[in-house]
Amino acid sequence: MVPLGAKFGSFDGQIIVTVEGAPYRHLRAIDWSGKVTDLIPTKEIPYAESINFVPLNLGASATPIEGLYLAVYTPDVIKADGSQFAKFKGDAIVGSEYYGVWRVHWNGTAFETTVLDANPGQLEDGIFVTPNMIDPPGAGCPAKGKDKSNGDDSDSGKTRASRPLTD
Image (spheres, rainbow, N blue to C red):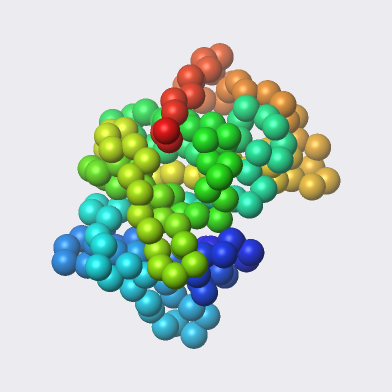
């Protein structure tokens, strides 16, 4: 869902979905009434697997946990630091299964697409980790300020290195 205040054309607050298969490899908006709009009918993002919007509060906690996490087939996770997306707040980041990571930006007149990383691997899904996920209001989350596994998974004790996605 497009965050309110994202300035993503007239689509703030609407659901945006990716359409992976041919012949309709586009992004589509779905409004509250169910109306579907093709956002970029002349531009394909082939094999789009995931769409995430750069949170408007990304970077607010100043913890190294914040950022974009992307699942890559076969099992791996790419983490891009939140600082790499500071200038993209409110924009869509689309992960393509075979054609990289894309940015979709409303320039005031039309949507622009830019490839941020052409070959990070076979992307499957992604999520931005934000301040409210790290330390939800009133929760007192013990992970705040830490960048280590909590010991409940097979990577216990390992720290994965971040990898830049943007120039």
